[in-house]
Amino acid sequence: MLEVRDLQVAYGAARALWGVSLEVRSGELLCVVGPNGAGKTTLINALAGILPSSSGRIVLDGQDLTALAPHRYCEAGIALVPEGRRLFTGMTVLENLELGSYLPRPRAQRRETLAQVMEMFPVIREKLASPAGELSGGQQQMVAIARALMARPRLLLLDEPSLGLSPLIVRDLFAAIRRINAAGMSVLLVEQNVAMAMQISQRAYVLEEGRVVSEGVPQDLLARPEIVRAYLGL
Ligand code: ATP
Image 1 (cartoon, rainbow, N blue to C red):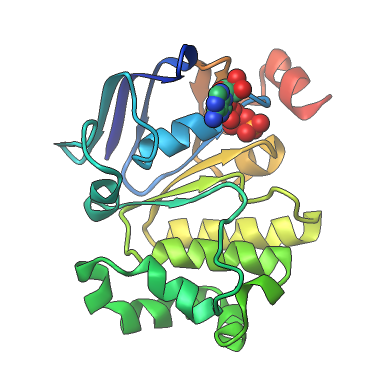
Image 2: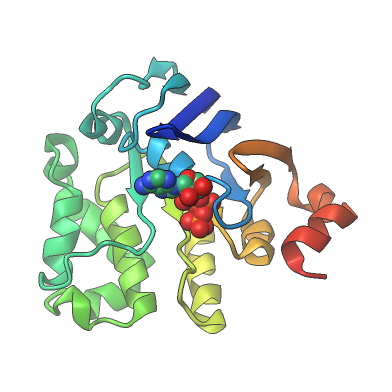
């Protein structure tokens, strides 16, 4: 559904992505892993339309998004859960969720989508009237994902959702991501928690220094000693 061809992104003179090509297939959960500074956040922000690319193509279901404004990416069906969650902490959970559905099409289905996300994340129902900043880190991450789902995307982009969360919470969170995918959502997950990301993903890309250096099904990648050494610390 998403085709990325030869994508290059630079911060001024400093190039961060050197011709990245990848595809997300319809309905799959795909992860992009790699060390600090590999370009994972740069990639996912470019795919969300908030970082311009200097060359290459981003095509969603046949529609070329490359030169479009950021809000057009959202309209086209891509929603980003940014690194660090970026909730409006002084606003209530409900207000945060409503912001996720500000575009006309999702707004028309707001009530129905809200019911769906509360079913996905029951804890959100109890916290709707609470300021988002009062929730625990794990709960805030769930609200951030729920806010992205409120836009009724076709493709969900997740940037390091496990960051700063305890292992037990990460397990719950990844179970929720798996459920979202099982309900039919295509998901691209960027993670430093390689072991967990590989466990729930159907395919993986390894990014190093702005380039894709390996790709495949997690089982095959994890059978390669250099990958296990580099990413699983074994
Ligand atoms: P991390 O997991 O640490 O966030 P990452 O794989 O997401 O790493 P990026 O944050 O995409 O990597 O960074 C890729 C490269 O781009 C790095 O060399 C980084 O220093 C550089 N970079 C990132 N953001 C900026 C910026 N705003 N200005 C200049 N250089 C940047």
